[in-house]
Length: 125
Image 1 (cartoon, rainbow, N blue to C red):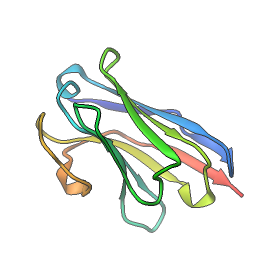
Image 2 (image 1 turned 30 degrees about the vertical axis):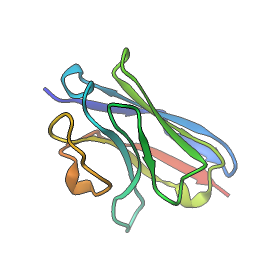
Image 3 (image 1 turned 180 degrees about the vertical axis):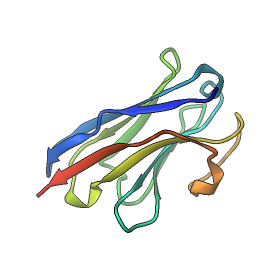
Image 4 (image 1 turned 45 degrees about the vertical axis):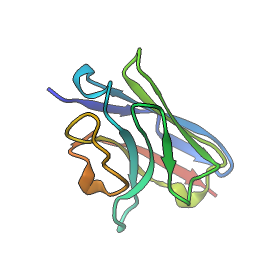
């Protein structure tokens, strides 16, 4: 059974940092691109960052230079280090993976078939 479990969210002041983690079941991790999306109330889910199985990363323009995505194959875990947080980063953050390994799912949520339950990040001004 495919499972993605996020953790690490919380409340932080503007300018602060958080690190999100996403633990994946073994069958979904080794050759899968792993991504983070976020969704704020009343807004559509949006792409944040992704890392492929070769550890090549992609970022949205909003977070590039502030966030860093990484993966630890030994732990089947993907991380999102978030620095210089802004109130507009407030959202529920979701970990996602495509249906098959070696897929290039891109930055649209439609490219991802597996989702975690999300973890809330709130940035106060």
